[in-house]
Image (cartoon, each protein chain N blue to C red):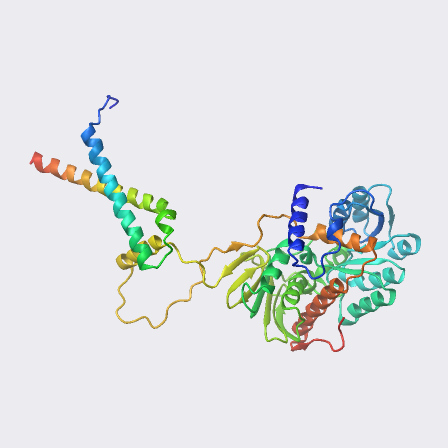
Length: 414
Length: 79
């Protein structure tokens, strides 16, 4: 176990001991355990860049073994074989893998349009499933995945690693404890300055490799990025949005892509709280952040800082010097000021953890999944987070595409 | 330029008194700041680094003024 991982486990242990997790994190006791653990056999479907990243996470989990994998793109197949090792059997067709192999769980990291049928088939074949976010292309597909999980009574994880990120957990805890008061708005954004393209060795592979850019395979920025922040917003507000509105366009990368290169959305929650979300691919000054705001303060969950609405004042002597400086150098107003600029707070904030952690939670998420599979422990909350996030994400997509207010689809609930 | 120099005891004492006066002035500012802005009394000690910094600024200003006085008076004497 590397040091960072040890550190993370320490943080989790402290949080669990403080009783901050309603579920008690049943998998925590197994974190970092070595030996005497029943082996969990895993098959990985889709071993592109994200799939291989998940492979790395699995390889770090004590007692987990990748026995097979599948990919129909030869370069991915070869790289995966190299990373996983020669003992793992490789397949080009996932159905053959499901029919031939006896595994405990399947990890799916294929393009979005494949998620539904792969997940349903894997569940129906008697496997537990970890599927990368977002769940699927539309409401019906997402629901089909939930029905398959219920039909087979299996575990279904959707890859939302922030659930296992110590910073996010601490932020949620502080919000629940009222540190910023009632959450009255959440502002989330994810900005990049890149075309989101991957190199294509020959033109006929364009859609296969750059699948994120086409509507037949993806819902673009919504399913690939927004789903993470929407999941956190749902978690913080302990609810799901009742309607969404938004607008998107292709205003910069006019290169034949079909998905929007910028999206702007407003989600309304039953409490009256709004979540605003925007994503763009032509400017990265503000990067990504999810800001939970209340009358007492703000928590920025990606960077892990809390800001008070009434930060401690500067020391008296500093204030005195500032006053003297203002008296000497400020312009003398002729009339009384009718408006004072409401400049942003200069509060530098407080880091919410007592240590810096490099992990984003992906490693602990896989640890948790393996532990749940080993103990056949089904946690509906984890599935619900993925389901509600995916539905809300698709609501945003539908609202933008159809230029209408999109309401939560009736009857979709866990 | 690299001659040995001697600083007399009187000079040292004078400079010490000047700096002490600067420090006292800065400390009084600290007290006024605490009273005016109703800051916690612990700032009498916790802000000593700021007091020291202000003392040095005051002392620097005084040195500047003394050098200025010295240059002006030398010019005056030449006339």
